[in-house]
Image (cartoon, rainbow, N blue to C red; front, side):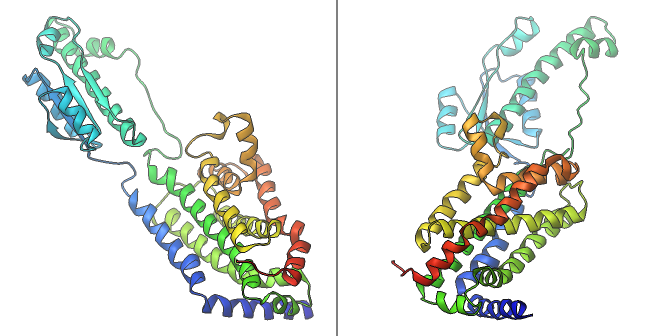
Length: 389
């Protein structure tokens, strides 16, 4: 009962600090909510739509104009301008007015009719990788459709039936089934790793900041005295209110994206609860550990910032970890977001049992237990260190 009483007293002290310091209000509530709203609304359509493209049509026939109308009819492409030359279209790309352009040289239609294989070129920028790949896909499809349309008309004139024409034009039919995310929604792919990653940044920083300010404001001895200099009780009482606030934010995010926005999830609701709990506690464990390694407000927050930013690259969502160099694959194990992403991908996105990725679950447990390694050093710092700006 005495231990519970001490934890309660430290918790009340921490709640008073949270109420008085506006940084906690902004970084634990306001900014996380803004991040969630920003990312989910930014990618609300799932895929970028109506991206500007240009046309350089030196042939200007009914056949080439039909190709242009088809390109403009695609969801992701929008023809916004016609250019008299390739040089002007290239300059438009450099001015960021268009993402790509389709070049149809003079004589294209006559060569098609004479079966002389005219060349249609398309140019696109990869400065923005997503836009470039989408535009490339649409213009490549248009090029294929143009040759197929002419071939269909030629074979029909020769007396072939529609079934024979279809067999010749497309001898193999592809039956495509995209698992878990059939819409290819970038909102589902990116938001579910970017938002937890940014939340981890806030958790890392706030965890290190709350310990560092005890030294900065010379309140560390009073904090430990409330727990009879038991650093375990002091840490539990200090971080329990923060844990509850972070859990409320994370569970609110999960309710919003999985149940309101309808993001695909194959796992049970209890798996979502477990994943949210591991997410918060592992991030707090790393933040406390960073301060324990370097008991300095400035240095510990710098390490947390660096580690959190690198986590987004090392998680494996944008570039698969298995495609990285062996050294980077080993380094990826040191980032909590990597293990969170693997648990989400396996147990929530695809519905696999937890036993399939138990080693990632064990790694998150390891991050939760990291503070116990440096607990004695934190205690020593709180009792003897003098804050140096």
